[in-house]
Each structure stands twice: as structure tokens, then as C-alpha cells.
Image (cartoon, rainbow, N blue to C red; front, side, top):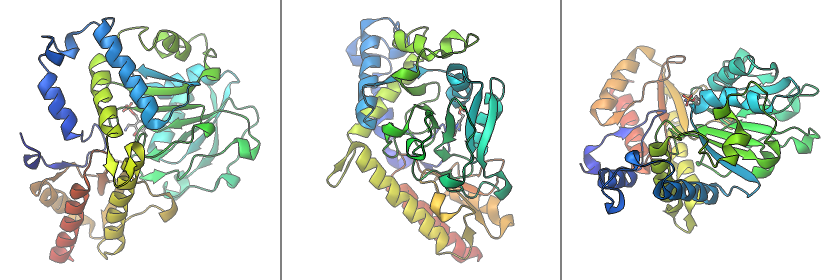
Amino acid sequence: MSSCSRPFNFSAGPSVMPLAVLEQIENDLLSWQGQGLSVMEMSHRSDEFMHICQQAENDLRCLLAIPEHFKILFMQGGGTGANAAIPLNLSQTGTVDMLITGHWSAHSKQEAEKYARVHTVFSGQANHYRDIAPIEQWQFSKGAAYLHVCSNETVHGVALTQLPDLTALGINIPLVVDCSSDIASRAIDWNLVGVAFAGAQKNLGPAGLTVIVVREDLLGRALPICPSIFNFELLAKHHSMYNTPPTWSIYVAGLVFKWSLAQRDGELSGLAAIEARNQRKASLLYSTIEQSNFYYSQVDKNVRSKMNVPFFLKKTALTPTFLQQASQQGLIQLAGHKALGGVRASLYNAMPESGVQQLADFMQQFERSYA
Ligand code: PMP
């Protein structure tokens, strides 16, 4: 199947994959590198798979410039599993601080409450998660084991433009970042981070793989009730092979890491090229919304996500028609999350600029027809 017969897929996740990666998988599906078997059929202990896994880890480290004193863990359980794994590994003091900026950090809080006392440093709920107070206004607790933040709220389209610098505030606790929906979309300052986690199914590859990047000094603190498969120290010791890892998802994610490293944009390469492209895609969509009298965004301009863009039609009743016509024109999976309604366009790394241009053109044409 050629690329032109594929629609532009704006799903929030699982989401669009790089076409070159899908083609390579198709090519290697039955016989990986001419060996007569699929990666799906390989023992996770085989030399071949161990090599695939190590290469994926090396490439991810290179792509995200992850320093050596961080371990990269390939786990299962998704972001939801990580929401439990984080307090199970890190909440020895019994209290954890959380920044609540939308649907997913609220979800993380609910899970953490099973294992620890949760103190909210700031919640955007009263203002329908449309903005984030500046860090000077966050109310930290005394004796929290860590601060949990979500760097990109997939449902509400709210993002932290930069990660909080806790040390600069004189707060000496690790920062935990749920970067499920913006990992590998922009650079991460690892000096600020204790643990970063992400389900793979947006920018990294297929569902089933969860990536945890954990600073070495944070290993070995798990609560006794922590399940072995979530124990960061155990996973690090066994190079993510304590039990059978999601081998197929690791293999495909490894191909996505290579694809990401190979991206070019003028002089820029790898993550810098991806980031520049993401900036242009988001600017195009937000300016299309801003310049119209027909669409609107509810999110404060300072905290708008470049990955997930929820927006609304002023004439709400036209939303189903908008979605239906978009789909007929090859612009699919644009319906907003059930919690918000409206429209949501997810602009992950594998969404080409031409897809966002087509969406912008469609939006203008729809506005001309129905304004
Ligand atoms: N955190 C964020 C920011 C998410 O977007 C999601 C899923 N969309 C999750 C956590 C939960 O991830 P999962 O479905 O992999 O459990």
C-alpha cells in the first residue's frame, strides 16, 4: 500500500507510526534479516533479541541525550501501571507532592492515593484545566518523597513549557515526569529529572511497552509490597529481562528510535529536527484557530500543547458534520476526548507537516461553507 492511500491519522494514541517503520516491519515480518523467523517468535534470551533490545536502549539514550547515571527500563503496564509503580518505588516518606494540570495527572493522583498521602501543590481543576499557575505559587508539603508532574496533558492540551527546577527553589526532592504524550518531541533537561516515564504508544512505537528512565540513586527504595515486575531496581539489575518483556513492542520502538535519529530539518538532525518540525506544525494549527471566528481553543496561550490540540466549533451542533467531512477527506480520528467533546488533533512526531496543512486547509474551507 502506498503512502497516498493512507489517511492522516490524528489519534491521541495508539497513533500514527512512521510509514518507513511500518514498511520495514512488513518486510521483516516473516523472516527477520533472512533468519526464517519473526522477532515475535524469538526467545527474549536469544542473542538476536538481546542485541535488538540493547540497540534500542542505546538509540533511545542517544536520541534523548540521557546521561549514563540514568537507567532505561523497558516495562509493561502503560502509563497507568507507572502511576502505581512510581509511588511503589519512591514513596518511602509516606507523602508525595503532585501538580494537577488535567485528566492524566488527576488520574495519577487517584492511583498514588492507594499507596501514599497525596498533597496537591496546585490544581487547575477549578479553572477547567485551562492554565497552570507559575511555580512560585505552588504550595509544596514538608517531607514529600517526590513531586509528580505531567509534562503534557493529552486530553486537555495543556503542557509545561519547561520542567520545574526544584533545586533552584531550594527543594531537594526528585521530580517525576509523566511524559507519555510528549516524550521524544522536544529536549528534556535531565538535570531537573529524577524519573521520567511514558507509555510508548504515541511518539515511541506500539502500545505494550512502557519506558522508565530513572536516576540510579533512586533505585533500591521500593516498598516491600511493590510487585517484582514493577521494582525498578530489580528491572535494572536484569536489564529489563526480569520476566518476558514486550519483545515485539521493543523491536518496533527500536525502529522508531532509529527513524527519529535519522530525521533532518535543514542543519538540524534527530530530536532537534523533530522539535523544529513540531513547532511549525503546532504554530500552523493554532494560528488557523486564532485567525478564525469559527473555532476556538480554551487553553491559555502560555501552556498550549504542541502534541495534542483540543479545539471547539463555536457552532457546537456542527461538530459531528465537521468530523464526518474531515474523515471523508482523509483526516481521521479527530473527535475530542469523551471528557471534553469537540475536536482534538494530535500532532505526534510521525504526523507529517503536509497532514497538518491539509487539516488547516480543510478547517478554512469548512468555515467558509458554514460560517
Ligand atoms: N499519562 C498520559 C499523559 C497519557 O496520555 C496516558 C494515556 N493516554 C496515560 C498516562 C495512561 O497510559 P496507558 O493508557 O498507557 O496506561
